[in-house]
Each structure stands twice: as structure tokens, then as C-alpha cells.
Image 1 (cartoon, rainbow, N blue to C red):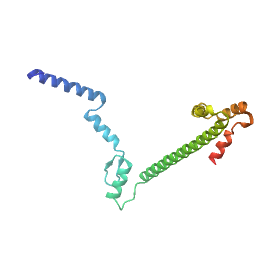
Image 2: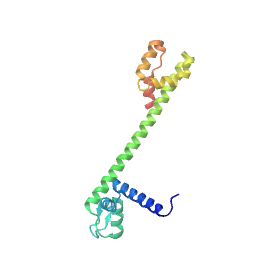
Image 3: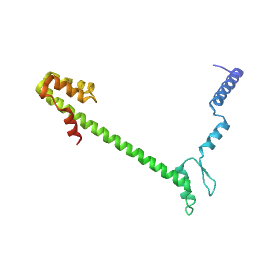
Image 4: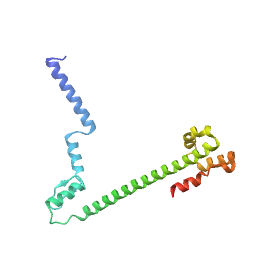
Amino acid sequence: MVRGNAKVKSQAKRLKKLEAERKAQGHSAKAVAKARAAAMKFVCPDCKTQLPNLKNAMDHFGARHPKSTVPADWQRLKEEELAELKAIEEEKKRKKREAANLIKKNNAIRACLMKFYEAHAPDKVGNIDKIMSKYDGKWDKLEAGLAKNYGDDAPKITEAIESALK
């Protein structure tokens, strides 16, 4: 344990080192003030209050200046933000529909293969997951291979997919 004068020197050395690290990272008082100023993107045209984002700006304008009209550029930004949120929501819905269709398709293929293998090759029933992962997206190739080996008895996988998606 360091005592006395050595302790004071050690603390001073440590503080100097920390200060140098902060300056290197841009955490000086000037840098922080500059970052804050850059973060304040919206200025109220009536009272010149600086606001960090559109939501705060709209809330401020509604609460402090209820009789004034909202600036046109703020209104435009709000509409763009709403349109962007709507597009994101639509994309989520589309992905959800695609996932549901993929599940339906895979279940139909699994059922078709299960039915076929139970009748023609019961020893391959346990390999259905492996077969499905191997031929994922290449169902016509699987169907052609089964038709080659089993002839007319081969399952019609493409028909099963189409019926599942209807």
C-alpha cells in the first residue's frame, strides 16, 4: 500500500493518465459541448428553444405555443417519419406472411414424404428431416429423383406445395 507523498504522486499520475485518455477519445469539455450543440437539431421559431429530436419539438410546440401553427418543415419531417414507420410495419407483416407460408409449405412436403415413405420405404421415415434439409428449395430435383426410383408411385411434391399455399 502506498502512503504519504508517494500516494499523492500516484493519484496525480493516475488522474493525468485518465485525462489524456479522455482527450484522446474526445471527451473534453469542449468536445462534450460541441456534441450537445450538434445533437440539438430543432430550434423553436417562436422562443428559440433548442430541442434534440422531432418528438420533443412537436411536444414543445403543442404545449408552449398551442395557438401557433407548426413549422412546415417539422410537419413534413413528421409525415416522413410516419411513412417510414408504416413501411417498416408493412415489411414486418410481409415477412410474417412469408414465414407462415414457408411453414405451411414445409408441413405439406413433410406430410407428403411421410405418407409416401410409410407405404414404399418404411426404413427411410426416420430420414425425412435429413432429406428435407438436403433438398430444401430444390423440391423439383427431389421429385425427379423419386420418380426415377419409384416411377409413377413417386409423390407429387410440387402439387402438395401448391395445394398448401392455396
